[in-house]
Amino acid sequence: SQQGEEDPQALSIQEGENATMNCSYKTSINNLQWYRQNSGRGLVHLILIRSNEREKHSGRLRVTLDTSKKSSSLLITASRAADTASYFCATDTGGGNKLTFGTGTQLKVEL
Amino acid sequence: DGGITQSPKYLFRKEGQNVTLSCEQNLNHDAMYWYRQDPGQGLRLIYYSQIVNDFQKGDIAEGYSVSREKKESFPLTVTSAQKNPTAFYLCAVGVDANSPLHFGNGTRLTVT
Image 1 (cartoon, rainbow over the protein chains, first blue to last red):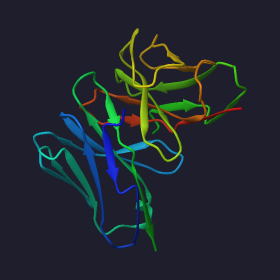
Image 2: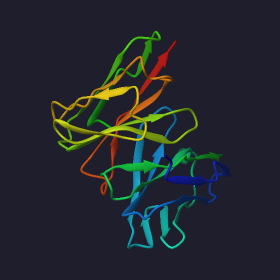
Image 3: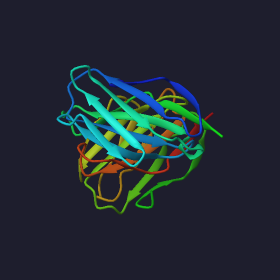
């Protein structure tokens, strides 16, 4: 079952613009993670935010978490062509030591 | 990720044959996971193991089997019972689900 749903499914922006993608989930979580996947490759971990945190930063990445709305957002500032990839959220519901991934947002950053 | 090796990168099999995908890690982590990814889709959990000689079914375990005889290795067998085996298979390793997962580069399986 898909715990998380990303929105939008696809996003195309110009280099230098900001990119925002959203993740909604269904059940209570212990933490939420964001991953990036380049085409045909494995996923790379970007950032983890715990259920008692509201915002977290890492370089050009900013993640927010609203547990009351069961949603998270990933903001990439000053995007670069190299940011072109698919981005996934993943949640740990705490029951079984496993992560459930969303459907992903395909980001394309054009020069 | 240099610490996780999935082989082979591409695999072709005839329908009705079992096939085993390899996943080896040198990160010394206890937890290992197998995910399946279909084109344009998210990841779905097949099996996971938190410790040697123990593993649990994920969301789509039917038609798959695993073993965890060594900490470093978590092979996945795609059996002939799996109705739609053609997919991209990803192995991941972690301390636990409260920590980041490290992924291999995947095996793309094509069954014809």
